[in-house]
Length: 295
Image (cartoon, rainbow, N blue to C red):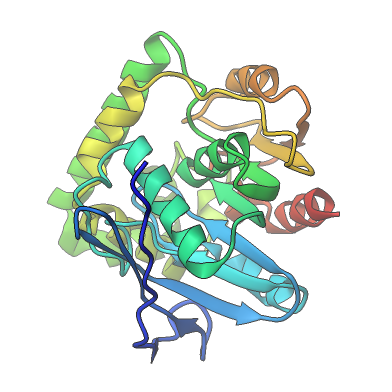
């Protein structure tokens, strides 16, 4: 197999999107076809590194509610997946397989093979796949995708594409929708068990990110058609924890048993008062599960 050549970009700049003074570092992986892949990520805190991977249409900002306690315990590395946030779209980032390859390239470039990982939604599936490939340390997958079957595939594609199409039509009204409890509840009814209680700034940033992600539609279509996520984790993976919201209306709770069957060694932890966005619905519970999964 042709050898992958890696080159870390020397240019570094202060952006501070997640937390003031967070450092965002662009990384470039040079592949054998001379294509450059740029992945933006933040690095903050102290201690052993912990990689955070967001969901589809989102960005590293989604982790903001969990960051203050986490950065006091670990060095938190939060990526923007290619085509998301501040990372530019790449030729192979419209598929799940392409995103896995991008993350593997990133891990090689930064010397992070075997790093502990937490993923949410699409990110949850990505970290499970990296665990299967023997690329991860301990893994916590929150609301992971990839375990839908039958009609759930068509439902996933229809509901995500129609919802984001509507948001794009209402783009100019997003701030008002996000900062009013009634409209926020209507917009996020499928994703949160308590949307009226969520932070308006966080919701606005997430909705804007959905509308701005140019790879959203083809990635949804690929995810809905792709085979179910396979397991188990490689023997080198110390621990796998899967978290699921009992009120998840996107990745239904019944899918949790398929995830557990694919990763029989995993611990399954329930969030009794959460929808899909369990890191927002029950942030204290999410922190508890992350800490438990990293012990």
